[in-house]
Amino acid sequence: MITYNWNCKTVDAYVETGGNDDVVYNVHWIVTGTTTEGDEEYSSTNIGTQVLNIDDITNFIPFDELTNDEVVAWTQATMGAEQVAAIETNIANAINLDINPVSITLTIGEPVPSVE
Image (tube, rainbow, N blue to C red; front, top):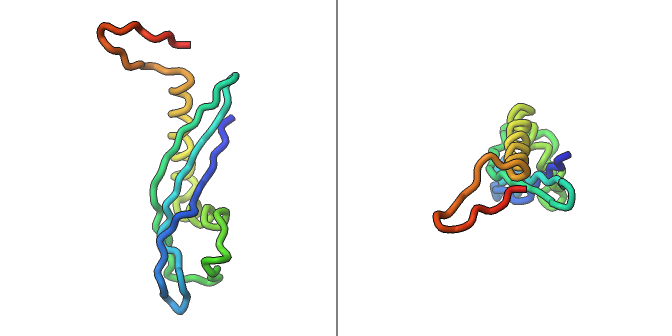
């Protein structure tokens, strides 16, 4: 089972807009998936940014009261379930290729490494 960790702690914010200070409008997200197979831990990470729609802020949360969970929720809601699933599937596929490689890099004149 792969565990996904969404880190949305780094944001861009307008100093002031709509009568509010430090308004988050862009999220720099990092998603890391990890799993354990036997004694080995495998992980893969995707990064990106997501612009938030701040046109109609109804329940403004001051920056010093924001949590990662709240910003993750905003980010995922803006992305939509399909894009969130695509990011997590991409990570899962990368981890599965680490566990079960289909290609390796070889060097002429060097021994072929064992694939377990």
